[in-house]
Length: 109
Image (cartoon, rainbow, N blue to C red; front, side):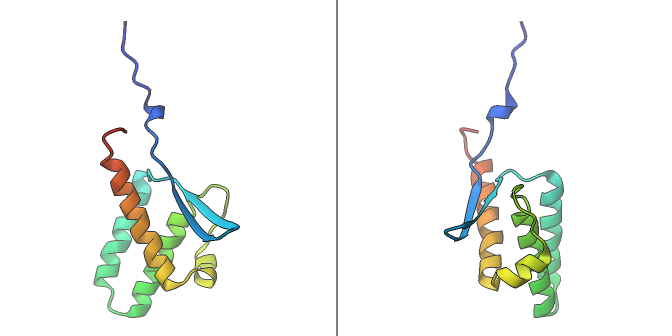
């Protein structure tokens, strides 16, 4: 008899980002390969950015891509520009990277 391994059980805890009591984003902590590649490209571009404006625009793109993973909401770069501060954008990117790393190193998954 074949041994069946149910990979659907290997789900990691999502990252919940709270902006206010009524404004929360639930982000899956296991990104698609496509999203990882996009985020790595943005990080490379941010390191090579020659102006603060370039870096800021890249943070907007990264934050919107991360927040847009919450399937209950539609997040655009315009939304991030209007509603998220630069320090919040940095925190979103860093917290997300930390959560993905934490879940990938969890021996129980």
